[in-house]
Amino acid sequence: MNSWVDGAAGSSYDVDNLPYGVFSRGDEPARVGVRIGDFVLDVAPVAAGEMLESAHVFEAPSLNPLLALGRPVWGSVRSWLVGLLSDETERDLVEPNLVPVDDVQLRMPFEVADYVDFYCSLQHATNVGRIFRPDQEPLKPNWHHLPVGYHGRAGTVVVSGSPVRRPRGQLKPADAESPTYGPSERLDIEAELGFLVGAPTAIGEQVPTSAFADHVFGVTLLNDWSARDIQAWEYVPLGPFLGKSFTTSVSGWVTPLAALDAARVELPGQDPEPLPYLAVEQPAGYDIDIEVVLNGEVVSRPPYSAMYWAAAQMLAHLTVNGASLRTGDLFASGTVSGDDPGQRGSFLELSWGGKEPFGDGRTFLRDGDEVSLRATAPGSLGGRIALGEVTGRIEPAE
Ligand code: CA
Image (tube, helix red, strand yellow):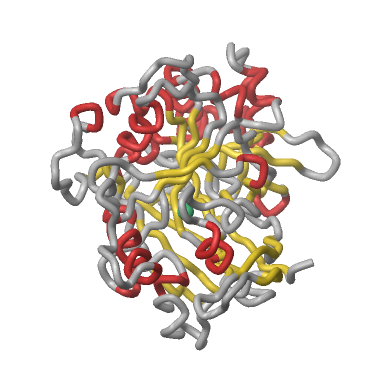
Protein backbone atom coordinates (compact mmCIF):
# COMPACT_ATOMS: atom_id res chain seq x y z
CA MET A 1 0.00 0.00 0.00
CA ASN A 2 1.38 3.42 -1.02
CA SER A 3 1.12 6.67 0.87
CA TRP A 4 -1.80 9.10 0.49
CA VAL A 5 0.56 12.04 1.07
CA ASP A 6 0.72 14.25 -2.04
CA GLY A 7 3.59 13.17 -4.29
CA ALA A 8 4.84 10.43 -1.96
CA ALA A 9 3.37 7.35 -3.67
CA GLY A 10 6.03 5.72 -5.85
CA SER A 11 8.67 8.28 -4.84
CA SER A 12 11.93 7.41 -3.13
CA TYR A 13 10.33 8.53 0.17
CA ASP A 14 7.18 6.38 0.17
CA VAL A 15 6.05 4.34 3.21
CA ASP A 16 8.74 1.71 2.54
CA ASN A 17 11.38 4.27 3.53
CA LEU A 18 10.33 6.56 6.44
CA PRO A 19 13.73 7.80 7.64
CA TYR A 20 13.98 9.62 10.97
CA GLY A 21 15.57 12.97 11.61
CA VAL A 22 15.53 15.87 14.04
CA PHE A 23 14.12 19.09 12.66
CA SER A 24 13.27 22.59 13.72
CA ARG A 25 11.19 25.32 12.15
CA GLY A 26 11.70 28.97 13.05
CA ASP A 27 11.98 29.37 16.83
CA GLU A 28 10.17 26.12 17.62
CA PRO A 29 12.12 23.55 19.63
CA ALA A 30 13.88 20.79 17.67
CA ARG A 31 12.06 17.44 17.69
CA VAL A 32 11.81 14.13 15.85
CA GLY A 33 10.46 14.08 12.31
CA VAL A 34 9.85 11.35 9.76
CA ARG A 35 10.23 12.02 6.07
CA ILE A 36 7.38 11.13 3.72
CA GLY A 37 7.58 12.42 0.13
CA ASP A 38 8.64 16.05 0.30
CA PHE A 39 7.19 16.49 3.78
CA VAL A 40 8.29 15.94 7.34
CA LEU A 41 5.79 14.38 9.68
CA ASP A 42 5.91 16.15 13.04
CA VAL A 43 5.49 12.94 15.01
CA ALA A 44 5.17 14.27 18.58
CA PRO A 45 1.68 15.82 18.41
CA VAL A 46 0.25 12.85 16.50
CA ALA A 47 1.79 10.35 18.93
CA ALA A 48 0.53 12.35 21.91
CA GLY A 49 -2.95 12.61 20.40
CA GLU A 50 -3.06 8.86 19.85
CA MET A 51 -1.69 8.31 23.37
CA LEU A 52 1.22 6.23 22.13
CA GLU A 53 3.17 4.87 25.08
CA SER A 54 6.43 6.07 23.54
CA ALA A 55 5.03 9.52 22.58
CA HIS A 56 7.52 11.45 24.75
CA VAL A 57 10.55 10.30 22.74
CA PHE A 58 9.41 12.27 19.71
CA GLU A 59 9.57 15.57 21.61
CA ALA A 60 13.30 15.11 22.18
CA PRO A 61 15.86 17.10 20.14
CA SER A 62 17.67 13.81 19.42
CA LEU A 63 16.82 10.29 18.30
CA ASN A 64 18.63 8.79 21.29
CA PRO A 65 15.55 8.30 23.52
CA LEU A 66 13.85 6.42 20.65
CA LEU A 67 17.04 4.45 19.96
CA ALA A 68 17.22 3.34 23.59
CA LEU A 69 13.75 1.74 23.48
CA GLY A 70 14.97 -1.19 21.40
CA ARG A 71 13.84 -3.22 18.44
CA PRO A 72 10.30 -4.23 19.49
CA VAL A 73 9.35 -0.56 19.93
CA TRP A 74 11.15 0.46 16.70
CA GLY A 75 9.04 -2.15 14.92
CA SER A 76 5.72 -1.13 16.44
CA VAL A 77 6.36 2.57 15.82
CA ARG A 78 7.22 1.81 12.20
CA SER A 79 4.01 -0.20 11.70
CA TRP A 80 2.02 2.63 13.31
CA LEU A 81 3.64 5.20 10.98
CA VAL A 82 3.02 3.06 7.90
CA GLY A 83 -0.64 2.80 8.91
CA LEU A 84 -0.99 6.56 9.48
CA LEU A 85 0.62 7.47 6.18
CA SER A 86 -0.99 4.84 3.95
CA ASP A 87 -4.53 4.62 5.37
CA GLU A 88 -6.58 7.40 3.79
CA THR A 89 -8.90 7.52 6.83
CA GLU A 90 -6.01 8.89 8.92
CA ARG A 91 -5.61 11.87 6.61
CA ASP A 92 -7.56 14.42 8.68
CA LEU A 93 -5.58 13.54 11.78
CA VAL A 94 -2.15 13.53 10.15
CA GLU A 95 -2.21 16.16 7.43
CA PRO A 96 -2.07 19.23 9.74
CA ASN A 97 1.23 17.84 11.07
CA LEU A 98 2.99 17.57 7.71
CA VAL A 99 5.61 20.27 7.14
CA PRO A 100 7.22 20.86 3.72
CA VAL A 101 10.80 19.61 3.91
CA ASP A 102 12.06 22.90 2.46
CA ASP A 103 10.60 24.77 5.46
CA VAL A 104 12.61 22.90 8.10
CA GLN A 105 16.16 22.84 9.29
CA LEU A 106 17.65 19.40 9.88
CA ARG A 107 19.73 19.12 13.02
CA MET A 108 22.31 16.53 14.06
CA PRO A 109 19.89 13.60 14.44
CA PHE A 110 21.57 11.74 17.30
CA GLU A 111 24.16 12.22 20.03
CA VAL A 112 27.18 10.15 19.08
CA ALA A 113 28.44 8.00 21.94
CA ASP A 114 31.52 6.25 20.55
CA TYR A 115 32.60 6.31 16.93
CA VAL A 116 34.47 3.50 15.19
CA ASP A 117 35.59 3.44 11.59
CA PHE A 118 36.21 0.14 9.80
CA TYR A 119 38.10 -0.66 6.59
CA CYS A 120 35.88 -3.29 4.98
CA SER A 121 36.23 -2.81 1.24
CA LEU A 122 38.74 -5.20 -0.31
CA GLN A 123 39.08 -2.95 -3.34
CA HIS A 124 39.66 0.21 -1.24
CA ALA A 125 42.14 -1.48 1.12
CA THR A 126 44.02 -2.94 -1.84
CA ASN A 127 44.14 0.38 -3.68
CA VAL A 128 45.34 2.27 -0.59
CA GLY A 129 47.99 -0.38 0.11
CA ARG A 130 49.30 -0.07 -3.44
CA ILE A 131 49.35 3.74 -3.25
CA PHE A 132 50.85 4.12 0.27
CA ARG A 133 53.18 1.08 0.23
CA PRO A 134 53.97 0.32 -3.44
CA ASP A 135 56.91 -1.94 -2.54
CA GLN A 136 54.89 -4.22 -0.21
CA GLU A 137 51.93 -6.59 -0.30
CA PRO A 138 48.88 -4.26 -0.45
CA LEU A 139 47.02 -6.06 2.36
CA LYS A 140 48.42 -6.83 5.81
CA PRO A 141 48.12 -10.50 6.91
CA ASN A 142 45.18 -9.72 9.25
CA TRP A 143 42.89 -8.16 6.65
CA HIS A 144 41.11 -11.32 5.48
CA HIS A 145 40.67 -12.57 9.06
CA LEU A 146 39.01 -9.61 10.77
CA PRO A 147 37.29 -6.35 9.94
CA VAL A 148 40.12 -3.86 10.61
CA GLY A 149 39.04 -0.68 12.40
CA TYR A 150 40.08 2.16 14.72
CA HIS A 151 38.34 4.39 17.24
CA GLY A 152 37.50 7.79 15.81
CA ARG A 153 36.36 11.04 17.41
CA ALA A 154 32.66 11.18 18.37
CA GLY A 155 32.69 14.90 19.17
CA THR A 156 33.48 15.97 15.61
CA VAL A 157 30.69 14.06 13.86
CA VAL A 158 28.49 16.73 12.28
CA VAL A 159 25.28 16.81 10.30
CA SER A 160 25.11 17.28 6.53
CA GLY A 161 25.45 20.93 5.53
CA SER A 162 27.95 21.77 8.25
CA PRO A 163 31.10 23.45 6.90
CA VAL A 164 34.32 21.45 6.66
CA ARG A 165 37.36 23.48 7.67
CA ARG A 166 40.60 22.48 5.97
CA PRO A 167 42.78 21.11 8.80
CA ARG A 168 46.32 22.08 9.65
CA GLY A 169 48.93 19.68 10.88
CA GLN A 170 52.31 18.07 10.42
CA LEU A 171 53.10 17.24 6.83
CA LYS A 172 56.12 15.45 5.49
CA PRO A 173 56.40 14.84 1.76
CA ALA A 174 58.27 11.60 1.02
CA ASP A 175 61.31 13.47 -0.31
CA ALA A 176 61.52 15.95 2.61
CA GLU A 177 63.96 15.37 5.44
CA SER A 178 61.76 16.69 8.24
CA PRO A 179 58.10 17.64 8.68
CA THR A 180 56.60 21.10 8.33
CA TYR A 181 53.39 22.55 9.79
CA GLY A 182 50.61 23.92 7.61
CA PRO A 183 47.23 23.41 5.95
CA SER A 184 46.60 19.99 4.43
CA GLU A 185 47.25 19.97 0.70
CA ARG A 186 45.72 16.54 0.19
CA LEU A 187 42.24 16.89 1.67
CA ASP A 188 39.97 14.03 0.64
CA ILE A 189 36.59 12.39 1.08
CA GLU A 190 35.67 8.83 2.02
CA ALA A 191 32.25 7.59 0.89
CA GLU A 192 30.96 5.31 3.63
CA LEU A 193 27.88 3.99 5.34
CA GLY A 194 27.44 4.62 9.08
CA PHE A 195 25.56 2.19 11.32
CA LEU A 196 23.78 3.66 14.33
CA VAL A 197 23.49 1.56 17.51
CA GLY A 198 20.32 1.85 19.55
CA ALA A 199 20.16 -0.97 22.10
CA PRO A 200 23.13 -0.96 24.51
CA THR A 201 25.03 -3.86 26.07
CA ALA A 202 26.94 -4.28 29.35
CA ILE A 203 30.72 -4.59 29.54
CA GLY A 204 31.63 -8.23 29.03
CA GLU A 205 28.75 -8.97 26.67
CA GLN A 206 29.33 -9.99 23.06
CA VAL A 207 26.89 -9.31 20.23
CA PRO A 208 26.69 -12.32 17.91
CA THR A 209 26.18 -11.64 14.21
CA SER A 210 22.63 -13.00 14.58
CA ALA A 211 21.76 -10.16 17.01
CA PHE A 212 22.83 -7.37 14.66
CA ALA A 213 19.29 -6.08 14.00
CA ASP A 214 18.47 -6.15 17.74
CA HIS A 215 21.11 -3.49 18.32
CA VAL A 216 21.47 -1.47 15.12
CA PHE A 217 18.64 0.97 14.53
CA GLY A 218 19.57 2.31 11.13
CA VAL A 219 22.10 3.70 8.68
CA THR A 220 23.29 7.05 7.42
CA LEU A 221 25.53 8.04 4.58
CA LEU A 222 28.83 9.16 6.06
CA ASN A 223 31.73 11.18 4.69
CA ASP A 224 34.96 10.48 6.57
CA TRP A 225 36.89 13.59 5.49
CA SER A 226 40.58 12.69 5.44
CA ALA A 227 43.80 14.71 5.22
CA ARG A 228 46.06 12.29 3.34
CA ASP A 229 49.31 14.18 3.95
CA ILE A 230 48.71 14.35 7.71
CA GLN A 231 47.59 10.71 7.67
CA ALA A 232 50.57 9.39 5.68
CA TRP A 233 53.06 10.86 8.16
CA GLU A 234 51.28 10.07 11.45
CA TYR A 235 49.63 6.68 10.92
CA VAL A 236 52.52 4.34 11.71
CA PRO A 237 52.29 2.37 13.99
CA LEU A 238 48.98 3.19 15.74
CA GLY A 239 46.73 4.06 12.81
CA PRO A 240 44.69 7.13 11.81
CA PHE A 241 44.60 10.07 14.21
CA LEU A 242 44.51 13.80 13.33
CA GLY A 243 44.25 13.14 9.61
CA LYS A 244 40.68 11.94 10.28
CA SER A 245 39.45 13.44 13.55
CA PHE A 246 38.79 17.03 12.44
CA THR A 247 35.33 16.37 10.90
CA THR A 248 33.08 13.46 9.94
CA SER A 249 29.74 14.25 8.26
CA VAL A 250 26.52 12.22 8.47
CA SER A 251 23.20 12.68 6.75
CA GLY A 252 20.32 14.35 8.59
CA TRP A 253 18.08 11.36 7.87
CA VAL A 254 18.63 7.97 9.47
CA THR A 255 17.23 5.12 7.38
CA PRO A 256 15.77 2.40 9.62
CA LEU A 257 17.39 -1.00 9.11
CA ALA A 258 13.89 -2.36 8.47
CA ALA A 259 13.63 -0.17 5.34
CA LEU A 260 16.66 -1.98 3.90
CA ASP A 261 15.22 -5.51 4.14
CA ALA A 262 14.55 -5.58 0.39
CA ALA A 263 18.15 -4.47 -0.26
CA ARG A 264 19.80 -7.43 1.44
CA VAL A 265 22.17 -9.41 -0.79
CA GLU A 266 24.79 -12.10 -0.31
CA LEU A 267 28.33 -10.96 0.40
CA PRO A 268 30.70 -11.26 -2.57
CA GLY A 269 32.48 -14.18 -0.82
CA GLN A 270 35.00 -14.63 2.00
CA ASP A 271 38.18 -16.67 1.67
CA PRO A 272 39.47 -17.93 4.04
CA GLU A 273 36.34 -18.73 6.00
CA PRO A 274 36.31 -16.42 9.04
CA LEU A 275 36.53 -17.68 12.62
CA PRO A 276 33.23 -19.02 14.02
CA TYR A 277 32.35 -15.82 15.93
CA LEU A 278 32.33 -14.02 12.55
CA ALA A 279 30.15 -16.59 10.78
CA VAL A 280 27.11 -14.79 9.42
CA GLU A 281 23.77 -15.87 8.02
CA GLN A 282 23.25 -14.75 4.41
CA PRO A 283 22.14 -12.47 2.88
CA ALA A 284 24.36 -10.26 5.04
CA GLY A 285 25.28 -7.56 2.52
CA TYR A 286 23.31 -4.55 1.30
CA ASP A 287 22.68 -3.57 -2.31
CA ILE A 288 23.05 0.21 -1.96
CA ASP A 289 24.20 2.35 -4.89
CA ILE A 290 26.18 5.39 -3.79
CA GLU A 291 27.02 8.46 -5.85
CA VAL A 292 29.84 10.89 -5.11
CA VAL A 293 28.91 14.34 -6.40
CA LEU A 294 31.58 17.04 -6.68
CA ASN A 295 30.27 20.57 -7.38
CA GLY A 296 27.17 19.10 -9.02
CA GLU A 297 28.93 16.43 -11.14
CA VAL A 298 28.85 12.72 -10.34
CA VAL A 299 32.50 11.63 -10.15
CA SER A 300 32.08 8.10 -8.80
CA ARG A 301 29.46 5.40 -8.16
CA PRO A 302 30.63 3.11 -5.34
CA PRO A 303 28.51 -0.05 -4.90
CA TYR A 304 27.97 -1.07 -1.26
CA SER A 305 27.19 -4.61 -2.46
CA ALA A 306 30.92 -5.08 -3.15
CA MET A 307 31.85 -4.80 0.56
CA TYR A 308 33.86 -7.79 1.81
CA TRP A 309 32.82 -7.71 5.49
CA ALA A 310 29.18 -7.53 6.59
CA ALA A 311 27.98 -4.91 9.06
CA ALA A 312 26.88 -7.76 11.36
CA GLN A 313 30.49 -9.00 11.35
CA MET A 314 31.77 -5.51 12.14
CA LEU A 315 29.49 -5.36 15.20
CA ALA A 316 30.40 -8.90 16.32
CA HIS A 317 34.09 -8.03 16.03
CA LEU A 318 33.65 -4.68 17.79
CA THR A 319 32.18 -6.46 20.84
CA VAL A 320 34.05 -9.80 20.80
CA ASN A 321 36.43 -8.61 23.54
CA GLY A 322 33.52 -7.61 25.77
CA ALA A 323 33.54 -3.91 24.87
CA SER A 324 30.07 -2.56 25.63
CA LEU A 325 27.72 -0.71 23.30
CA ARG A 326 26.05 2.56 24.20
CA THR A 327 22.97 4.11 22.66
CA GLY A 328 24.28 6.44 19.96
CA ASP A 329 27.38 4.43 19.11
CA LEU A 330 28.23 4.88 15.46
CA PHE A 331 30.37 2.58 13.38
CA ALA A 332 31.28 3.25 9.78
CA SER A 333 31.99 0.71 7.05
CA GLY A 334 35.17 2.19 5.66
CA THR A 335 35.42 3.68 2.20
CA VAL A 336 33.26 1.88 -0.34
CA SER A 337 35.05 1.12 -3.60
CA GLY A 338 34.14 -1.26 -6.40
CA ASP A 339 36.20 -3.05 -9.03
CA ASP A 340 35.97 -0.33 -11.68
CA PRO A 341 37.95 2.93 -11.53
CA GLY A 342 34.62 4.80 -11.72
CA GLN A 343 33.52 3.11 -8.48
CA ARG A 344 36.27 4.39 -6.19
CA GLY A 345 35.07 6.09 -3.02
CA SER A 346 37.97 8.49 -2.39
CA PHE A 347 39.93 11.08 -4.36
CA LEU A 348 43.10 9.27 -3.23
CA GLU A 349 42.05 6.33 -5.38
CA LEU A 350 40.34 8.34 -8.14
CA SER A 351 43.59 10.30 -8.67
CA TRP A 352 45.81 7.32 -7.80
CA GLY A 353 47.69 9.06 -5.03
CA GLY A 354 47.54 12.43 -6.79
CA LYS A 355 49.32 11.16 -9.92
CA GLU A 356 46.31 10.89 -12.25
CA PRO A 357 44.04 13.98 -12.19
CA PHE A 358 40.34 13.20 -12.76
CA GLY A 359 37.08 15.09 -13.34
CA ASP A 360 37.87 18.76 -13.85
CA GLY A 361 41.62 18.04 -13.72
CA ARG A 362 41.88 17.78 -9.97
CA THR A 363 43.57 15.50 -7.51
CA PHE A 364 42.34 16.56 -4.02
CA LEU A 365 39.79 19.01 -2.60
CA ARG A 366 40.04 22.75 -3.21
CA ASP A 367 38.64 25.45 -0.94
CA GLY A 368 35.02 26.11 -1.91
CA ASP A 369 34.43 22.59 -3.26
CA GLU A 370 31.12 21.02 -2.32
CA VAL A 371 30.85 17.23 -2.06
CA SER A 372 27.60 15.31 -1.64
CA LEU A 373 27.04 11.62 -1.17
CA ARG A 374 23.71 10.28 -2.37
CA ALA A 375 22.42 6.71 -2.38
CA THR A 376 19.44 4.57 -3.28
CA ALA A 377 18.49 0.98 -2.56
CA PRO A 378 15.67 -1.38 -3.54
CA GLY A 379 12.57 -0.74 -1.42
CA SER A 380 9.84 -3.18 -0.44
CA LEU A 381 7.24 -1.56 -2.74
CA GLY A 382 9.15 -2.43 -5.92
CA GLY A 383 10.81 0.97 -6.40
CA ARG A 384 13.91 2.45 -4.85
CA ILE A 385 14.28 4.25 -1.57
CA ALA A 386 16.71 7.14 -1.06
CA LEU A 387 19.14 7.45 1.80
CA GLY A 388 19.55 10.95 3.21
CA GLU A 389 22.16 12.99 1.37
CA VAL A 390 25.32 14.13 3.14
CA THR A 391 26.92 17.35 1.93
CA GLY A 392 29.89 19.44 3.00
CA ARG A 393 31.69 22.48 1.62
CA ILE A 394 35.40 23.04 2.14
CA GLU A 395 36.34 26.24 3.95
CA PRO A 396 39.91 27.57 3.88
CA ALA A 397 42.26 26.71 6.76
CA GLU A 398 42.21 29.24 9.60
CA1 CA B 1 37.30 5.88 6.71
